[in-house]
Amino acid sequence: MTHQTDVLVVGGGATGVGVARDLALRGVDVTLVDRGGLGSGTTGRSHGLLHSGARYADSTPADARECIRENEVLRDIAGACIRDTDGFFVQHARDDPAYFDTKVAACRDADIPVSVIDGATARAREPALTPAAERVAVVPDGVVLPSRLVAATAADARAHGATIRLHEPITALTTDAGRVTGARTADGTTLSATHVVNAAGAWAGDLAATAGVDVDMHPASGVMVTVETPETDTVFNRCRPAADGDIVVPHGSTAVLGTTSVDVDDADEFATPDAAVERVIDECSALLPAASDAPIRTTYWGVRPLYSPSDYGDDARAISRGFYVLDHADCDDTAGLTTVVGGKLTTHRLMAEATADLVADRLGVTEPSRTANEPLPGHDDPERLDALVDTFDAASPADADAR
Image 1: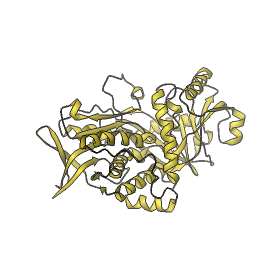
Image 2: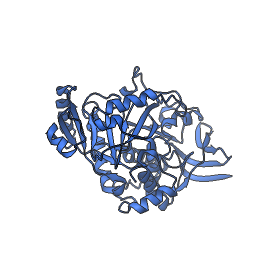
Image 3: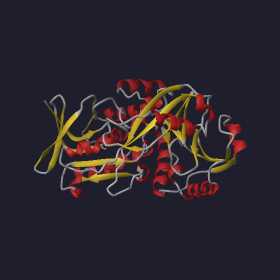
């Protein structure tokens, strides 16, 4: 059996469905395929943070500026896929006050709204916050419900003519005379395309390799621990250089504690040690003391789709969280294939737009992107959004307690 399409998108995470939506809105015939339900990879196994950019303001200001711009876009178009919580960057009594000052200054330089309050004021707003909080920088962090986001994005793509094929694992990309021509699925179906977008996330290197193309992925695993807590409604971030257990993301009567970062060789098979769970709970308890003995609702692991074409040493945290769009016709002499890697859930729409711009140019399509201005289906109707989650088999542990 053969299915013909202009553009085949492999990968049904936030970026993949974003590419499908963007191209469909431009009138391109697009098919998206995923080996599971939507968001079943990295997207649905994140901690669900809508970044303000503050986390990156002092280390990678360009990434920070992308985050705050896309934060504002998603608030405009995604409605009930987003929860407006704000975020606290907390100077703990054990933390360096100079680092806090640097963080605040960097936020202002990156045009991230930030205000500073003392610990007592912060605890009056969030009584569950540690008494060891000395100063707090308040920034516009928020919470993303990944299940709703990917389902609504896919629904809009489909409404504009895209085909969404789920639970169809790809066994290999197909090639002919140095050009990628599509893909084969595990059931023997051939998906034939003029152009293929590799949006397979942490598995992008494995997919590209089936066409003889090298994509230098460095997947890194991280554990998230969902605990039952006294209700909090603000994201807590430890204001120190990136380390294990430095964020608490509220989800109603629960909170997701995160995370770790460990290089893995295989994005499907990797160690999940109990010690990592214990470390995250212990570290996050410095922000949210109730987490130390709170009942654990669930523990889950995600794999970040980190890409680095150069040596980064022994620490995966040193790899940029920025994104890359690779045109393999230029960098590998392999036409018909574009790979999008890296990035964050917050910037998925921008990643998709950049990818769709490149693909549209290759296809001779002049219609511009409209995704920053078009509200998602069901953005104002939580019940409709949750029905779409069921339609696209997009339920995920990241927001299981928040919908």
